[in-house]
Amino acid sequence: MSSTGRADVAESGNSSAVDRTGRNSVLYLAGALMQGLGVFLVQPFALRVLDSDAEWQELFLSVSVIQIGVVLGAAGLPLAITKAWFDHNGAAKARSISGFLSLLGVAVGAAVAAAYWWMAGGGDGVLSFTVALLTMGVLATVLAAQALLRAQGRPVAFVLLSLGSSVAAYGVGLLAMLLVSATASVFMVGFGTAVCLTAVAALFIAPPSLPFAVPGAAKEALLIGLPVLPHTGSMMLLTQGAAFLLAAVAAEGVSGDYGKVQIFVLGTVTLLGALNNAWVPAIMSAKPEERPERIRSVMKTASLAGLALVIVASGGANVVTHIMAVGREDLIPVAQIMPLIALGYLLYLNASSLLFADKRTWILAVVTPSVLGISAVAALVPASAGNLVLMAATSAGSFFLLGIVYFLIARRQAPGGWPLRTYGLCCFAAVAYVAGLLMLPRDIGSGVITAVAVAVAAAGGLVLWRLRKAKPTPSASL
Figure 1: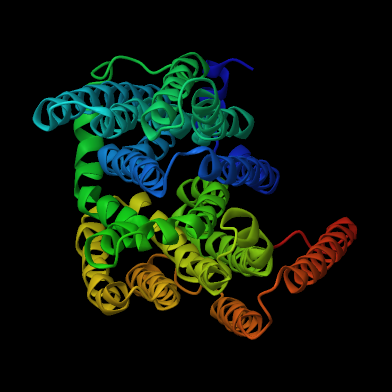
Figure 2: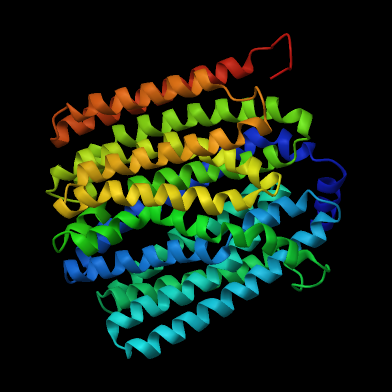
């Protein structure tokens, strides 16, 4: 089907995206798993190839700059693109906003990179962050294309762009170090090259239109997106700000140690964010009277997905940490606690989707920075002491606070549609499970046994779920 045909389907009826939510969720999740696996395979090699811990910390912080900056620079416009797709004349409006975001991102990234290079005076250390800033701008084109693909229900293309801008970029960066020089600067040049090629592919897969092709589209998007700017910056700092706080107040090298297992935070956010690509169209396309049932269905799925993610990620943390941070068994409890951020994050995702659907985005500009402020104050003491276990626990608590606050704000937009019992039980089970893991030995043997037990339980749960789905039901109601 052509892109025009897909637009007609989306505008004439929203049900197709909803009907495919389950299948799309699996595809998005599979893509996110491949994305996380790629980083997991590359990072241990990068740690061993780099000349020093200082080079690793430079590389880690450069990649963090990209991940924080690109979401901050996008200013909520990707969700505005998806929301616009379901409006009147939505396809044209969404493509117009996509073009605006792409051009804005490249222009801002290039300007900031040039300014930084000039102010810092050049050099190898400067090159890493300069490339990171330029790559940040280029990635806006990928985000814009993915927003269109998400609305169109094209998860395969969405996932391919994700892999190109992450797994392939990490792989090219590592290859560049092996072939040229084992420095963070060389890695970042390879990384940035792969991202640029992915952005070019994005323009062909989901072509945008000129920013002002639809009069008023860019203005409407900015009215929705700009209030989200403080929110997006705060979200990224909640996710990755611990490394920068540790770099500022802790002993030298502690930030890099935290970065060795921060994949358990980034992976959790990535996996739930991948699933959210299927949940967002389902929520945004629902009519007001359909919202309670839609939210109930999505939240039950999200709660169980969050619990499953904690079980698998925390259960495998021992083995993964032994691989990614050889000889640092003290980092295992840090990694085991980190996935608990899923409990608050999944609640935030669904509640904030309702706020976007009703264009009440100004609330985000107040709530998230406030939670960030509370989180920063709470994290300052453990960060100063270099207590990474307490840092991980503080992060999990901050995300739980975030989710609860957004739930309290958005609950009336889907009255009676929040399965609080299911969510509460999943939260209790996740915390109890991690508490049990923390009492186990940290040697690799215990880690392997735990990981195998989790894998067997996960396989058994998947089989039971498929058998249950295969049984005929007397009613098709949710």
